[in-house]
Image (cartoon, rainbow, N blue to C red):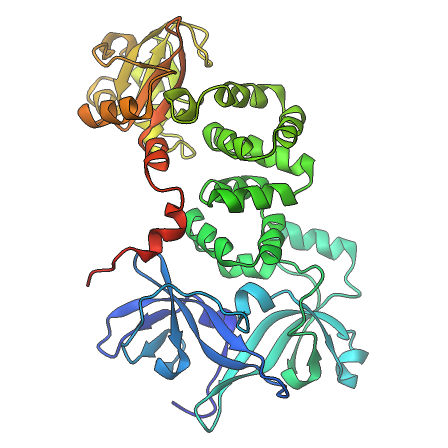
Length: 434
């Protein structure tokens, strides 16, 4: 590898990592650096690589044999233990991007770059084959008009002039900023699925986690919260102002929002419920009234519900909605009006496979499966689990004492209750087989 090899971290993240035989090992997610005392340049010690199974592992730079425009080549020896950041280690994309810094060169000061934020970091391999941070790509923060910022938000193109400066001329790179944007970090992880983004956020320190949460829109943050451990959920929601916290709860799935509210102090939960729209707060109050290990405590209040006169074409259009979870899309529940839970009398259900076999103009009321008995809200976790397993179902109707549909329990709700409480933290420690 040439001694003049220079790579920008933003371009490095996302590159595929291969072993010497050409088999893909994973994908680069971040770069780990250390700031040795008395030295102006941070030392690059390794890469955070995402391997199959969403495991994030550490690959030392001594294992990297080549970096080019399209790939990273390693020696093939990768420790599959999950990456855990040490106290003196800094993640470039997660922690340095968007960090406020000062540039001291006269040219930068004259051009308005005395106060700037980090956009990117260039790393370079030196004569002794060690990698160091050598250049910082910064963006101007002063002199940017409010109109430019508004255009930037609409076009997703960042406003302000940019400059590439020597890292020796930058101060504040290793200082924890009082407040730091997370926009650049989120751009770096833009390709991640919600569950994977939640993994990244979980691994951040509390300060950075709060900054990322502040940068996400309500819908995206709601999705991420549903994938995080309970402690992280409580920490993030408690760090938001109450108005926004209520908006995020409204955007969450009702059962997940109710579980989160149950983990908050009662007075805080009540404050948030009062700030929510009444039609959003009402189902959460109902869910909170049930024991968490019963069908009522596990169910979602937003199943697919239709009247018996609805056509099969209408039913297929309902389950085709992108925002609908696969488990909920597997069943259509047929009820008498009103069709909002709690509904009128529950009549039965129709499997999506049956809908696909019937003519579109037919009525769902003519193909109802009445043999599958609903469960009461008081049904235990064991009863629900056995029912789902016995009949090979992924969702199950829940009714009240008057036979009205009040929700549906899905298999993912059950798994959340039968897996250990720390399963989200421990899922990467499962044995990895070749």
